[in-house]
Image (spheres, helix red, strand yellow):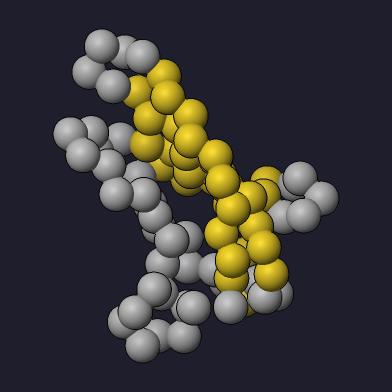
Length: 78
């Protein structure tokens, strides 16, 4: 709910022990609408609010042994 009330205004992972990650957000057609490293998604594309709905995400993390982990799921934007 990115409405500037300081509660749930951003979507980002909570990662223990690592501080480097890449996060991609996809629309319902599978197009990448957000792709950034070590950042938080504010529910916008190019400064404009995205429509309410369900979006997919993919978060890639490389651990201290240089192993790649990819976490996927969905996020609901209200």
